[in-house]
Length: 538
Image 1 (cartoon, one colour):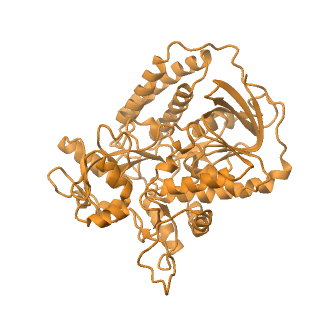
Image 2 (image 1 turned 180 degrees about the vertical axis):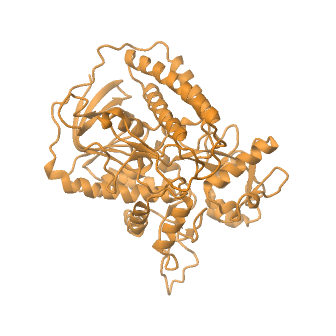
């Protein structure tokens, strides 16, 4: 039997953004935090590098703002950038207060302590401003926030819950557009439960799983973006998909990312013959922004017909490498690669979705009562290319801003009652799940081939034709069979893929992460690509 739940706040997603929001809200509010797998399955846990923030006396807010604007290819919203950076120190202090074990600076004079944590530098940054916990920052932050959440009796942490769709007044045939909660698949029972809430938060991460090669965990399927779109929210700049330049190239490594901090600490990118090549593409070399580095690697791989390039930090001392990059060292050693003596084989892989659901400075979407935070959202911070380590910062700043906004509205919003149960009376159990697996594979392959690092009009047209056929097949399957995690994710991923393709076709220029051979130059005016669903246009 399906169940009904009532909460003040429903948080769909259990990563940095969702947990930050939940922990910022007061203890008298009833909060549900949903994870569609195990709690640690999201992208936060796997983030290595750190969090960008203005923490050193030699750094300034203006410098961080300018670096972000420069990396963003003219598309960043300066007000969003400034808002995020101005709240960066406050966000880091909140994390320190929660108990996050950031790496301390051994060089600090105990007689003049100043700022006591070690800061590193990454691509696009003009200062050392990345606070980190060795090379496993995401895991350190996630474990700390999760432990704090477990100690809060008002926060209910629910695993193996897959959001199917949002419940809105429009969906129920009522006057108004407000979000009232969500239908959620309980993977343990196979039933779709009904969650009613005063406020619903989409913190589901990005959609990099739409590509064949990705650094992201399996759950990065664009669920929040697709659900928001179906509910009437505008989306923006989904053509900008960041490819991390350096993911480990090994048949058994799956999706292990080699942190950018290696390049920040002096690692060199090399061809198989040992030659460095980044200086031919950008005077900043290995510390150029990610879009430039990823395109350079892609160019060299295609030019030479090679499977990968190499990242070499072996010129640094063994002690330095093991101290600063213990996770990378141990993981590579597991594949018989000793990074203190050997270069690391690397390839670009889909990493971050720079566009998303349009929100304001409080994380509010176009649908009242619905918020989007973290990678799911489009705040204007990242522009055409996200600068390294700004993404975690965005999670904390906007998660806390959304919590403040929710608290201010709380007394005016009642918990919705008597929401209808999910109707599964017209569907049956599927005996053709091979269709889901086939469509999933086909989607990710043509997105990689046609909507990847370098694009053309012809490739995009082919992708659009294929994705429309897939959407029709998926819709028919969805209408006739009981939902499963694989089906829900495929449906969402195909929808977001279609939005990505449409956005890429609309941009008649090359800018930031969107590079097309048909329009290789950047237009003089920088404009966002905004898509409007029919339900919103009404």
